Length: 71
Image (cartoon, rainbow, N blue to C red; front, side, top):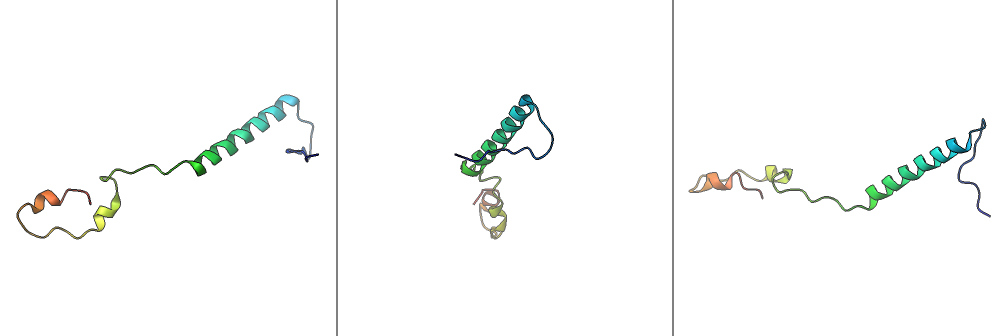
C-alpha cells in the first residue's frame, strides 16, 4: 500500500479544503514540469546580444549597411 500523499499534522480540514489543496499542488507541479520540459524559445537575431560583441565594421564602402545587420 502507498503512503498518503498529504498528511494533516494539525487541525481537521474539511473535504473541500483538502480537495482545494490537492488541486493547487497538482497545478503547481504540472506548471513546473511544463517549464522544465518545454523547449527554449528561439530568439530573434535583432534581440540577440551577441551581435554587440562583434568588432565595429571598418571604414569601407557599404560599412554603414553592415553596422546594423545582425550577426
